[in-house]
Length: 349
Image (tube, rainbow, N blue to C red; front, side, top):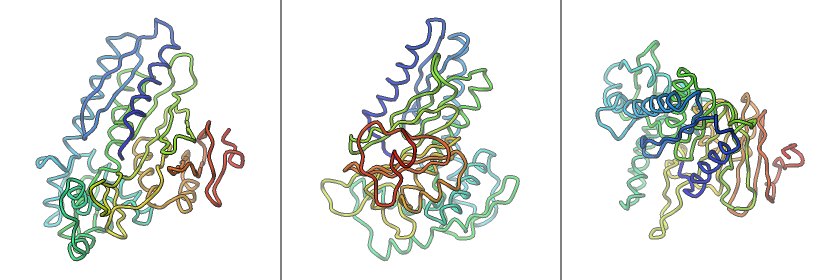
């Protein structure tokens, strides 16, 4: 889920603007850590700077620990070991890896396979294309597409997983950062922190409580058109954004990091999608799912989930909104897609 660097910087600025509304007696810290291929940031308030600083350090360390479990780049990670051995016999895995795969399989079922946690072989293939390697032949693409199918992952409670196909490979790239933020939130709460903003490279954000003097954390969402300026007020909730990697200027071949499991090739979409949910795990998985299914089917999915909302925005300013609770505010101008909710019909402002 690539994210506009300017927007990511804007989120941090917004967090500090919120802190400015507080009193000098409201101590906060702002810390960063590189993990999972991006920069995680936490702005946290505490009863003292020492408390906030220690809690933030522990939360960031938890993210690093989870990266060591869930990485498919590190050959000795728990996920890499599972991918190598789970077909030959069931594998016992750490509790966090079991839980995140369990959640990923839930969204695989909800999306009828559009979000598929076993898309790993295809993701690796098209990442290589993004690095400049030749596009695959039809035969190679078909061979790898046959490896994809979430139904080939079997959970054996309480802690074992088995693959039903020898070429299955799990990829947690569309859910792992959100899960890591949720666990970091648990750490902060265990250390007495109730107000914080956690940012996973701008692609997933979790807001705890609210800054002093505010009702929530105001987050400006991704707008490829620079016309709509969607915003959401978060408090004990999360938002994630998905957007396809732009094509290379040197090649006309399809490329991108978000793969459509049905076709085996990078999804072709004109939208950036932001999804709001109660947890980082949910918003992370949901934003990818909604990018793949599109506004028409995605609206029904959002409406079937508790406390969820989403907005699709195209580069020319067309938008569609769906909500089952959270309000997404549109402060700019937009043109609704055919058959979609508009700010007036959806009561969004």
